[in-house]
Image (cartoon, rainbow, N blue to C red; front, side, top):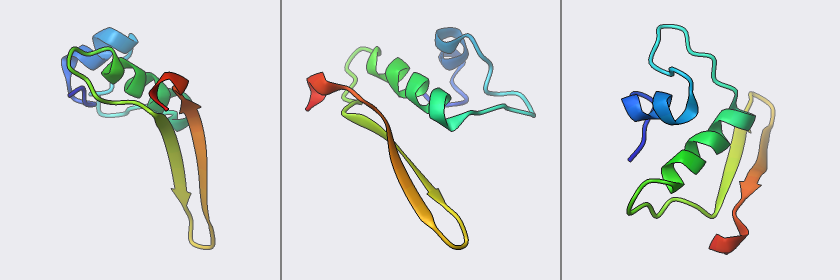
Length: 71
């Protein structure tokens, strides 16, 4: 499985997520990470990427990307 501290993640995405200050933009980085995981041999990752944000007074959810071939 591809994770944030896996060296292949930086290679696949062209960004280093292991430094002390990591700039992570959920709307774009999450889709890129899941898509990279989908490309790995034997992967069963897919379907869709959903972002849920929980605040003190609200909860929102948004589907960021769907892979229709997984439906």
